[in-house]
Amino acid sequence: MAHSRPRRTLLAVAATGVLLASLFSGAGSAQAATTGPCDIYSSGGTPCVAAHSTTRALYGSYTGSLYQVRRASDNATTNIAPLSAGGVANAAAQDSFCSGTSCVITIIYDQSGRGNNLTQAPPGGFNGPASGGYDNLANATAAPISVGGHKAYGVFVAPGTGYRNNHTSGIATGDAAEGMYAIFDGTHYNGGCCFDYGNAETSSRDTGNGHMEAIYFGNIKVWGYGTGNGPWIMADLENGLFSGVNAGYNANDPSIGNRFVTAVIKGQPNHWSIRGGNAQSGSLSTFYSGARPNVSGYNPMHKEGAIILGIGGDNSNGSAGTFYEGVMTSGYPSDATENSVQANVTAAGYATGGGTTTGPTVGSTISLRATTACCTTRYISHSGATVSTQVVSSSSSSAAKSQASWIVRSGLANGSCVSFESKDTAGSYLRHQNFQLYLHANDGSSLFANDATFCPQAGMNGQGNSFMSNNYSTRYIRHYNNNVYIASNGGSNAFDSSTSWSDDVSWVVTAPWTP
Ligand code: AHR
Ligand code: AHR
Ligand code: AHR
Image 1 (cartoon, rainbow, N blue to C red):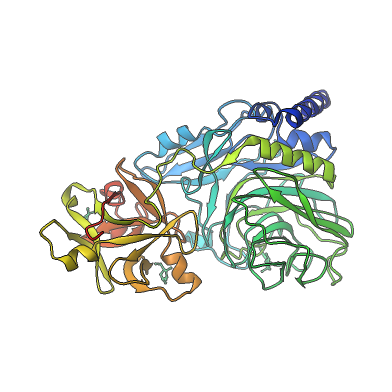
Image 2 (cartoon, helix red, strand yellow):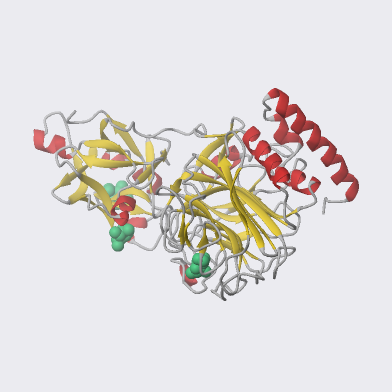
């Protein structure tokens, strides 16, 4: 659509001017309004053929929809656009649409004009957990941040979540050259397969070596890995995540855990690269640039041109991560072009905060009071392993008070979230199991860490906080018949009832009954 030559030339000139200006001034949000990453790729002769972001426009002139959300209360949908041409997403529009209920991201629109939108991934070699074997959709409020001082939301991928497009236009196939970058949360990852963004099979099945070329981010070590404990940026080329030319260990691929990570993969005949950096400052480094793996199937490549987000090529969906923006190009971008994109990204001003209500302070001891009218004297309490809400008052026994007191810990599975350790049973945490809350001793497993990690958001009814499950990201801590669950609004269990859902999932963090 909007890619005629005169405009491209104008943008090239504009981009150069802005980049020069940013070099001298340290830049600012003005840059995002005048040129975007895809303008830079276009100037470099390797235009975007897919451009996805829930946080900002990726062309300086883009004013169309960035993404669509659907709310649980009535299944209505709305599109979220940038605040201005080339600008940051209008998160306030989402907040007002989703107020008092929950929302999922249903469509991530392609800004390139090619219609390469991402939607709920269908079943493939593996089924997803949603109806019909589809993957889950992401909770739209789970990854709040700010960009250039404006609140925005990323795409929070809990295991089971995935987006895909198997009918694309303009994406590289066969051995054709392409590039891609994405911005991820470097503190949200896991060792499941495979948190990817990029080129995959159009059948959602593993059709063999070389049928994919996607960015992978996480710390799975089944195929390749680099220095430290991860996470690493690797290339998912199918039946292998490559950290360098050989499978297994490659010393030049470092662990990269910045809060915001820029990850780059690009490939052309018998040549590919891994690059990466901090999306908040500094430049990109090259972690690999060289020949294709010396294993049958990767040279030449057999790219199929589907696009995936948050899953593997065969719809493996055990991985976790957070995506903010990403593009795929036609042609192999030069390092110089990518360096300019990185300058644009750092100038855009990604930051934590997002103007959201913060949760309880890590290290403090607290109690959690229900806000539903029935139950405002009730607090989340345990008796042995059993968790329920109990009425607690100043005249309660000291045992009852300590059973309703919790030490806030950094989330066992996600440092941006929290876990609740029992005040009277050291080493035991609130965790869900079959969607009900229990107090169990930490067994050190990744499952336990996830089951015990909750991400605070503003309370759904306007009071206190709601606590999203880290691994079931459409579920929140909720009381029902005075028992405590992780519940989704209007889901299939009795405790998912939409009646008084927003009250039942809203908790006031109070001073602890037992300090
Ligand atoms: O290459 C790693 C993974 O292996 C792919 O993403 C998936 O399709 C296969 O299971
Ligand atoms: O609570 C949902 C799941 O149930 C938990 O993740 C798991 O521990 C149990 O199987
Ligand atoms: O947990 C107490 C009440 O039980 C909840 O408010 C309501 O949803 C359920 O009936």
